[in-house]
Image (cartoon, rainbow, N blue to C red):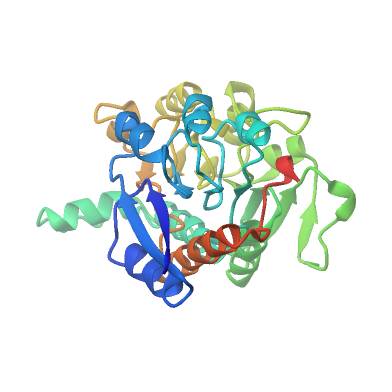
Length: 330
C-alpha cells in the first residue's frame, strides 16, 4: 500500500508545477497529496495546511517559528533560490532540513537581467507603451550602444558569471565584486574583480546579483543606500538593475534618487514589499522599468525546479539526505 506524501505548495499552479511533480513522484511508492495555497500572504491557510504536511515549498511565503513548531510531520522545507522568508533557527532546533536550488534559475535570471539592461538602453518602457496607444513617436530619446560601456556586477556566483559572458558578447567591459575576492575571476579572464566602492564609482550600469543576507559580516540587506546611489549616479550612465531581492536596496532612497535624476534609470524585478503596492511611487516614475519578480520563471527553469522538489521529497520520505541543504544548517 502506498504511503501518503503531502506536499504543501505556497504558489499558484502555472500549468507546469503540479503536473511535473506528479510525474516525478509516480511509481516511487507514494500517493501524492498536493495542496496549493495560491495566495502566499494567506497565513491562516498556510498555518492550517502545514500542520500535517510532509514537505513544504514556501516560495515567497513567510514561514514563522510558530508555523514550524506546529508542523509535526514536516521533513523538508524546499526553496527555490532565496530562502530569506523562513526562521532558520527554528528549523535548526527541529532538525528539519531547509534546501534551496543553487544554479537552477541562473540562466533565466541572467538573461532577464540582460533584457532589463537592453530595455533601459532602448527606452523600451516609453516606446512600447506609446505604440500600444496607437502613437508613432520617434523622438522619445535616442538609444545607447552597450559596446564599450562598463557593467558592474555585485556578486560573482552562477548568475553573475552567465551575465558576464552575455555582456562580454555585447562588447561591454565587465567588472565584479565578491565577498571572497581572493578567489579572483576563476578563469573569466575578461572580468576584473574589484572592490565594492570602485565598482559603484566606475560602472555605467550596476547589476545586483548577490543573495540577500540579513546577518553576519557579509550582510547585504540595505547594501545600497543613499551614499551608494550617489556613487552610482556620479559615474557613467548612472543606471541600476536589481534581479536579486528588493531589500538589498533602500527603496525610499532609490525613489528619491530617481526623482532627482541622481540615478538616471533603474530596472527592477524585485521590491521591498511584494506584490508591489498599487500606489507605490516606483509605478509612476518615467525612468523605471518594472517586472513582477519573474526573472527565474522560464519553462526550462521551472521544470528543473519542480523536478527537484519531487526528488528531494522522495529522498526525505525514504530517510535519505536531500540535495542542497542551505549552508547555515550544514
